Structures are given as C-alpha cells and as structure tokens.
Image: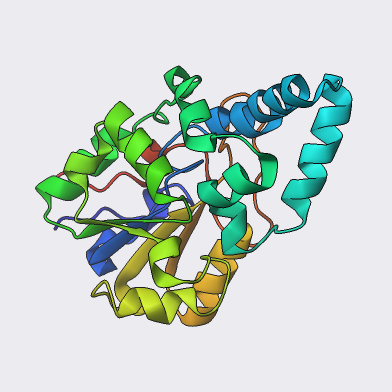
Length: 231
C-alpha cells in the first residue's frame, strides 16, 4: 500500500502500512451520540415523570441517580436492566426517537475504504444487543463489518481489563497491528494497557456538543482525518 511522507501528514494521520485490523466503537464514534443523549436524558425522564406524576426536574434527578448506581459496569449498558429498574419498556421507547440515529461525517467512506482494502473491521461496543439491532436496521454500517461484538456477550465492559483478552479469544488480532477508534478515554486507556498500539479518540461524539480534545490520546473530529490512502 502506498504511503506518503509522514512529515506532510497531519498529526492525526495513521501509519496504515502497519495496521492490519480495525476495531471501531459504535455510539459516539460511528454514530452521533445525540440520539443516546436525547433518549436517556430527555425521553426516559419524561416518560418516568408521566408514569409517576412528577415534574420533569424531579423525575430527571431520580433517573440520573438510578443511572449513577451502575456507572462503569455492564448494567449501565443493559437495556433489560433499565427496563426493570425504571419500570418501562426501554427498547420499545427507543423506537420513538429512532429518527435521531445518524452517522457521523465520512463514516461510510471510511468503512468502504477499509472493505476495499480487505482489512478486517470489527464493531466492538458496550451497546446492548437490542440497541445494536435497532441501529443496524437504521444505518448501513453492518454491511461493511467483519463482525459485531458486544461486551454483553463477553461478560466485561470495554473499560474493564477482562474485556480485551476475552475479545481476543473471539476476534483474531495482534495488538501491535490493531487500530481502535473510540470516544471513551477510559476504554482507550484499558486497550492501551492491554497493548493495542494504534489508538484514536473521537473528540465530538455528539453533533450537539462542542469538541473535547483528549489530554491522553490523539483526537480526531471526523474520520476524514484518518482515512486510509487509496491503493
């Protein structure tokens, strides 16, 4: 694969000649996090308020406190857990705002380029299976992926050390020649500790919030910055 002079490349560019496998997060990375933010911070509290005769502010306070109890664990990402904890059908409720599911800029071009170059490309996500199904049905990303792996299938969230060896038993990859793109610094840090060499942070997971550049990882605002060269 041809490469260009690294001195002429932006600091976000990647040494694609060294990368054999690509791991990609879904929410906030390939997809605009605005959907999830609206759903969990507006739709769920609004429904909770109606069900319990509360003001939106009181309902949101209670819902956020419930979220906080399991932050950083698999339960945080488990739609069935939230259905039980909040007394509502969370997957069904998601359908009401599914029109907000959107791809980030340049994602399909990026995925298409990887597919053309026959680089194994795996979706590696903390999302619950029913959330994955909804988003695959609403976007074309599934046709570009070698596999889809949910942390719920492996028993560990991506932020946890146990996720990465479990992933390697499921997906064939060499950490030294693997790229991970994710909007979570905690996930990138866990991957780095495991030995994944090429890491990029998404600085604008939601189109409705300003960019937040990482202090610890190279950040990109969109996939054009790390587009593989045309072979």
